[in-house]
Length: 268
Ligand code: SF4
Ligand code: SF4
Ligand code: SF4
Image (cartoon, rainbow, N blue to C red; front, side, top):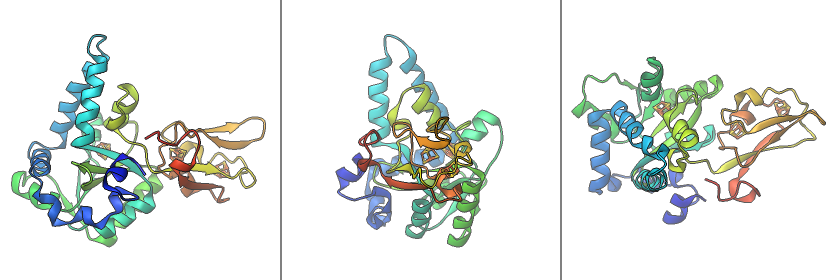
């Protein structure tokens, strides 16, 4: 249970059907953020944040800057890593699924990939304020197929919130370009990207040391023990994306509750 779940007394905040209801749009602050996101566009938002995070590197402002940015991100807009299974469940809970181009790739690599899967009010808000923005509508079946394909490609999913616990999108990210990953690792901003609810665990009796899983981990959490030729997972580094477990042909990797893992507990 992460802090959003504890605050709202649910097991996983993004799997609570109430959080997808129309009632959530009565919150003015939330609607302002959604309007801003759609109106100025994700690229603007990312650029805006990129300006702010620079203050975390200045010796005189770093502590205050980290505190303020974490506080703002936790109460306004950011994301949490989730497994493919949870992402598929979110598709069932949400409606009006639309794809937008990934802003991080566009900004950092000048490439367009339609893998920002938005839902709920985002379709209509975007159509109203930025009708020229490229958008692809997909039904539930197609949305799930795309998610499965992105995970096969090795992308991990984040559920994005606007004033928690309201989920608005599923981002499908490559750490090489993902700005939230950079905020977390380069600027030490926890709320740049929150870790997920699970941690991967390897059953060493089943692991044959084929290393298939290691190349899937974008967070540097997996190692091959040279002594035993088995994979070992560092629970302090695992973000719980589940990409490793999806490819293990020996079914040696299971995803378990973060709070049950010493070393991973309470490290969001
Ligand atoms: S968070 Fe992920 S999918 Fe979303 S814009 Fe950034 S890299 Fe793209
Ligand atoms: S894919 Fe499975 S069997 Fe292969 S190294 Fe990873 S955990 Fe072990
Ligand atoms: S160890 Fe597995 S679940 Fe954890 S971050 Fe790496 S790929 Fe994702």
